[in-house]
Image (cartoon, rainbow, N blue to C red):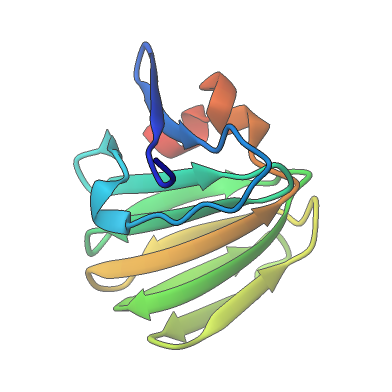
Length: 138
């Protein structure tokens, strides 16, 4: 049956992996939630060339400054999030706004209120698959 997830539990990492090259349909309610911290959780679907993630952030949740080889698009579905660039620029995004981050652009984030953010990455987030995403867990 299409849309079923293969769950892999690797110490603290839970993620979903698309295993076939055919189309698939998913329901976010069925995707396992990875509680990264008390104020931050995510649901993830990995494709062959892309990763999509749904983050839930409590007001005040911070994602420390980091960068990655993946291009990133972040869409705020609810709430408000501040993105802080390494050069000091700040962008406040509210519901319906999208942030584009090219590969290797250093950035941090701060939830200004309880928020839900959908992130799309290309290529896929192999670091998340391997559990080497400690910047999200502290």
